[in-house]
Image 1 (spheres, helix red, strand yellow):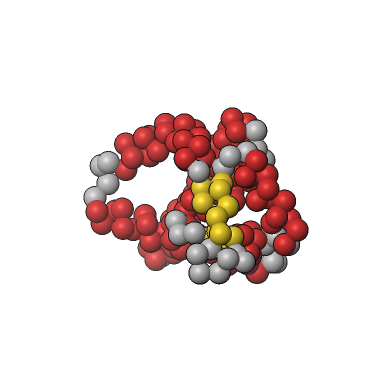
Image 2: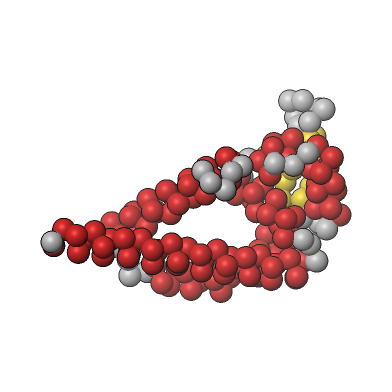
Length: 160
């Protein structure tokens, strides 16, 4: 009987975590919209800039298109918009002059810092009292959720 109660409590906690994840997703969407409003760019464009910034190493135009699931024409249009807006620079690849690498500009980094500063400060403050073990558990949880999301997005199916 106690085992059933524990399983019900566990199921309820899982549902509460899923509800919190929905709320976090909605909040991140609002932050992305604020950044889009400030920059005059579409949220899709800023998703590309975010991907480039997180990647760190130079990313080719083709790699960006593949990661975003865009056609070559759509990727070219996207990069043209990002370049016109001052969010990225195109640079010839040193080892293959036919390829173009993309680099996020300081302007794009400053825009992100302006929008995200308060959120990042509040997040760091909220996490300040967590023990290293709690942070590792949270990291494992979020890594697993991110993997599930990536797997779902890559499957192309709502039922997988």
